[in-house]
Structure formats: C-alpha cells, structure tokens
Image 1: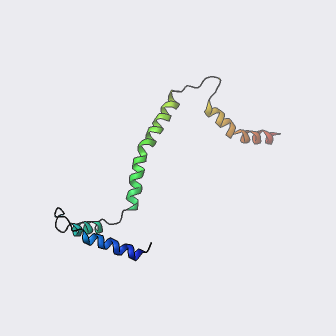
Image 2: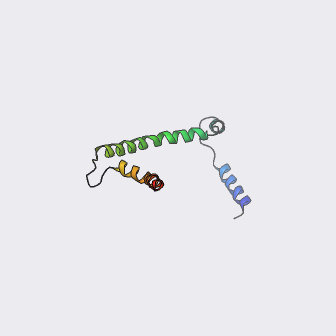
Image 3: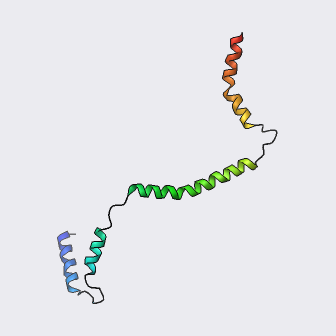
Length: 102
C-alpha cells in the first residue's frame, strides 16, 4: 500500500470529523508536555528494585533449608558428614605423611 496515499486518507478522515466539545481546552498540549517531562528511567534504580523484590524469596529459602538441616537428625548408618568430608580432603595429606616415614 502506498504510504502517502494512506496518510492523505487518514488526514482527510480526521478533518471531516470535528473535535467533540467534551475534550478540555488545550488537552493535547498538556499531554504532550507531560510526555516530554517523563525523563529517562534510571537503570540502577530498576536493578535495585528487582534485587530488593528478590531478597524476600531468597531469605525464605535460606530459612527453610536451615530449619530442615537443623531438625533433620542423621541416622547412625549415614554417619557424620563433617567427618567424612574432612577425611576425604585430608586423605592425600595423610598418605604423603605415611609414605615419608618409609
């Protein structure tokens, strides 16, 4: 479709329809002035707002996991996780110490 022809038809239709008396005086001027004064959104403020909104679910998850860890008692078959972790991490150091004796 030809854009100039479309523009001409739209302008002709707008001119044939007279504005209503219910529109306040200088309404379009006030609206255009308000749109121009909106300003540029602050990116840092948007990030800060999103992070503050995300902090509530994160705190809730941390509290739930902390309560689960606190109230879940390990069975004797499972053993102590801290001791298992320490033995695994220090296994290489213990091996080197025993090899240096011989």
